[in-house]
Each structure stands twice: as C-alpha cells, then as structure tokens.
View: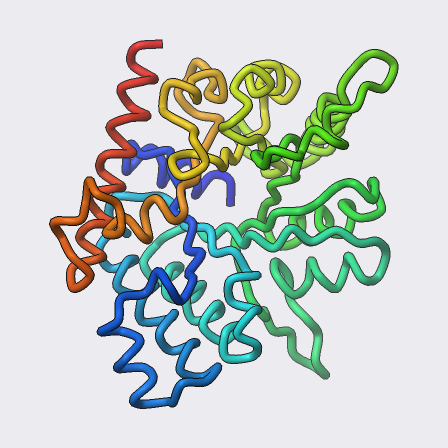
Length: 308
C-alpha cells in the first residue's frame, strides 16, 4: 500500500492528507436540517449529516489529493450510526482512488491488539468465509505498550500489504510530559523512532517501508532529527494549519527525493468556509472553500520545498 500512496502523491504533486474529522458544528445548517428532517434529531440524523458532509468534501477534493484520514472518535461519538458513516466514508474514498489512513490510535497487547488489527486492516474469519470490517489502507498505532502491541498489526500488514503510522512525537502541547523524557541522555521519542526504523526493515516497499511514523508539524527541529533516524519511513505530519504548523516548518520532514512525508490538515480544510479567508464561499458552498484551502496548502508546501 505504501507504493499506492507514493504513486498518488507523485500523480497529484500534493504530499497532503485531508483529515475527515467532522463535528456537528462544522456541518452547514442546510445539511443538518435535511438529515434531521429525514431521520430525526438523533444519532441516525447525525450519522447521515456527517456522511453527506464528507461526501461533498471528497467530491470537491479527490482529484487534488492522494489520501484522507478519518479520525474514528469523531464518528464513534455518534454510536453505531456514526460508525456506519465512518465505514461509508472509507468505502467511498477508496472508490475515488484515495488511500485511506484510519486514525484509530489503537494500543493494546496480545489477542486484543490482533483483533484491532483485524478490524481495521485485516479480515475476520466467519465460518468458511473471511470479511474485511472497516478495511482502511493504513492505521495509526500507539506503541507505548511495547512490541506486543505493535507486532500483531505488523503481521496483518504483511498479509494484507497494508501499512501503519506509529505515534513517535505527537503535535499536542503536553506530548513532552512523557515523549521528551530523557533515557540515558536521549529523549524517549528518539528511542521510539529507532524502534519504528527497526520494525520497518522487514516491511519494505521499493524505497520506503510500510511502517511509518507520526511526528507533529509543531516540532520541526525534532522532526529533523527523526527524519535521519527513520530514513526509510514515511512520516505522517499532523499539526498543519489550525495547530500552527506552516509549510516552512515542514521541509525537514521530507527526504531529498521530495518524498518521505505526508502532511495532514483537518478542520483547516473541512471547515475552511468558517475562516475569514474563505468566508466568501459561504455555508452553501463549503466544499468549494475546502477545495480552495487544499490548493493553498499544496502551494504553501510546494513553495517551501522549492526554497529549502
């Protein structure tokens, strides 16, 4: 799957991923009113509104981008109808040729980890047949329970030719409470990065491993170090836009070949119409605002890479 991600990036010239992380207050009223009129002001109505919102954004951006990253918690909060919207979104994006990164941040051990891996990347055996449940192309994984929590995912990835993005240095302000702690004089995130590189050796595509890492855009200097520690790992970079990351902060996440990183923006794209810069589109044309935000993000990153 890493080869498809690279091919999509090269085709679009856009090393970005759109985070499909819907909140009800992002969704324009004309969509929620229609969904609530049909299903009621309930979980089912919310699930339908989310699906219609996602679909319109995807329809307006899929030709510009290589991948999407739905955050499962934004769907789980609406129960089973929310998870149904998540699955419809995954399937629709794959129909459009997009790579789907399931932002599920699972982290457990043994049979529980194996079950999570099966649910999101593999196939579950039911009698004589096997079925893919959510069927994303990549999943995010929390490694802080150790190898026991990661290896079941790696095994499924090998079977299904899928991939992982393992949390190494996250973009949130308090990440340093644990991730920056020194062990024998080195921060913990560097040791995790070394482990990601080690796991990746046995999971290589042509030039890059399908075991990647998550490193926040809000920590560019740390990203520079981690890029050297994990030269063959793709880095998923959250924190662009709404969390403060800019194109100029990102150049060290990329290798000299212009590959090696994919930058995420979520509400900066899906709720772009709420920003002053894109307010001219209005709620009725929210997806056109999302397209404009994608185009601006691509130009920002491209300009930074050209001038590094």
